[in-house]
Length: 91
Image (tube, rainbow, N blue to C red; front, side):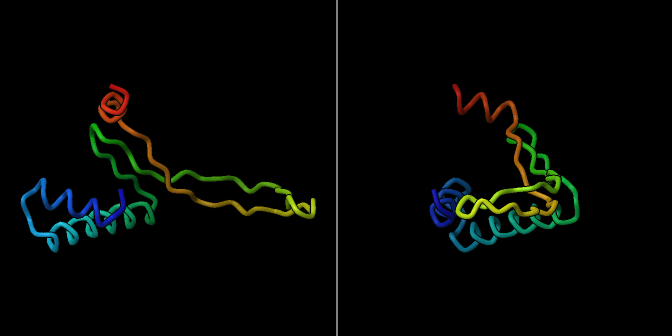
């Protein structure tokens, strides 16, 4: 499902216009992004938790040349699904 299809489903489910559904989805994405950027996490009970994981610096290898290179430390967004979501997907 792409973003446009998701907007359509939200509009249909919530009985709102496509414009309002798109605005709501964009606001949700912006809010989650802002929270993660500030180092916080977003927990939606029953759905899951969005948070930031710290990835340590490490040495990598270029597969074409075999040369080693240093990969810097980074922060990576992650999602941990909640029990209700896992149960529904597996059920």
